[in-house]
Image (cartoon, rainbow, N blue to C red; front, side, top):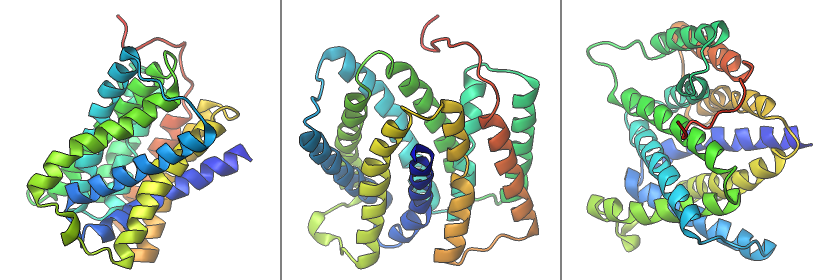
Length: 285
């Protein structure tokens, strides 16, 4: 049952790629992000109240949440802006590189990891075929993959020091607060946004589904499923996103694109299933 729940979580996250792509045709990036995180924050707040879970407000918890929020903010901003200039399939596969980047940043060097990186980089090259007219959206998405990898490392470390639910909730609050100014500068006006069925469903999928529901499902399931297997299940996200982009958006990949997708997926799977070394806190000398 927990593994099935994680698979559902992965499917929800994969659905955010085509959903965000459609939403960005109607609303600007920062405005969409503000609405998404505001909705997610409200949903998480309701869950906290219903479960009567205390929200820690001490200085160490807020400091850890602030550091993690910085990486989360950069990751979502660069990923969302990148989606305006690249396909949902490309965004999904490139973002998936965080699964390989995490052990790389943690200095877990071995033959298996280098094999995974080689496959992932080769697949990325075939997928986006960089050239002089390479899409700027792909570069934004690469930056997002790096930010998400650093966010995972920070959260993994801080979760051992404080209440993980409180740290996660404060991250949503902080990112929502930081998004207000750039959204207003971008031209965000609540009354000027047309909440069409497409935009509403995109916000429900990304805000309630991916930001609130999937968060709690993941926390619950990881009490029973080893982290190694969790990473393997999450590695299915890019493949699911590509399929959903084909089904919903009609996006197509040519032969080289499918070959690249396969290599990236293989690299992600190999990297996710590599044996982990003894734990060392990356934030400590």
